[in-house]
Each structure stands twice: as structure tokens, then as C-alpha cells.
Length: 118
Image (cartoon, rainbow, N blue to C red; front, side, top):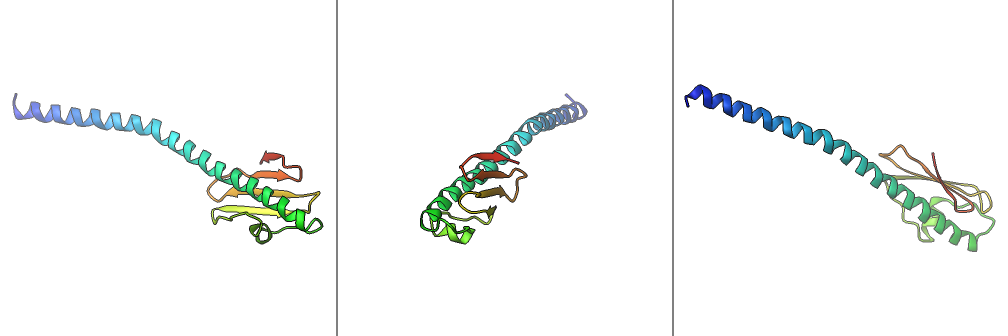
């Protein structure tokens, strides 16, 4: 085999290798993005539930008050800089919204503890 044939074979193998890597990346990258979004959303949902549980503990001591994030932190809620948590209403009209800063899904828990998404 002469040098030209060797170079052509080497280039062809390289192109095939690049094509295989491109195919794998085409499949893997969207899967990774979906996985990451599921994990971000799971974290937001977990914070919504924990905030609800802490607010219920807050209401046992302060049934007429409207809780804040700082208030429920004293009752077991651990905040995270990646989670935006909004609490509104009192015991009967409670609304907790939680979403991760890198996600577009918001979880809402009402006074009855029912979870919904926006």
C-alpha cells in the first residue's frame, strides 16, 4: 500500500469515528438535558413539600399568623439559594410556590396540601 492509500484509509477511519461520536452526542445530549430537568424539578417539588410541612408546624403555634420563609425555617424548612419559594396566605388560604432557578416549572401547594404545577 502506498502513502496515498494509507492517508485515505486514515482519513476515512477518522471521518467514520467523528460520525459515530456525532450520532452518540445527538442521542446523549437531549437525554442528559431531560435528566437534569427532572432532577431540578424534583428538587423544587421536595422544597415545596418541606415548606408545606414546616408551615403546618408553624400554624400549630401561630394559627392566625401568615408565615414567611424565615418563619418556617425555624420549623424545619431548609432554604436553598437555587430554589425560589413564595409563601402567601394564612392557615386557610395558604399557597406555596417553589421553582428551581434553572427550571421553568413551578410547583404549587395549597392549604389542603394538594400539589399542582404551572
